[in-house]
Length: 148
Image (cartoon, rainbow, N blue to C red):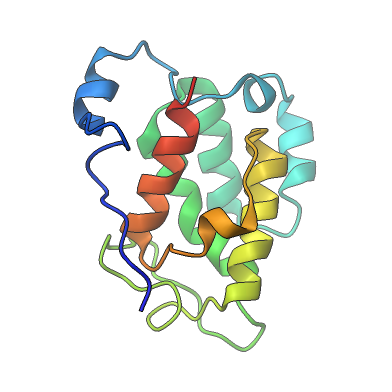
């Protein structure tokens, strides 16, 4: 069984809430993502839900983690097998990506590639191997986006 990643602190034991509180607005926004035009974002997210695209545009404007999390249901839905039911619009942190939402390891890897491309942050397949829940995914994204 994969070990769950702590969702409330970074590898150095700093609480994410403390990092976020002291961070300037837009701290989660990467230069690569922030420099894309709205039409480029729409093109990069072709086939994704309208809610996902709107959350991406909102994230580009405000750079908040909440806006980024708004993209997750659409990101997950896009990478699910065709006959799988869509995920709920509100994802609980304890929801399991595989058992509850239907993402298999290949879909998670494809989602990681898309996030790498979209946000301009290097993500390796081995890094996502331990991600089991929505909370794990959020913690992973926080870590990657807060890395200097």
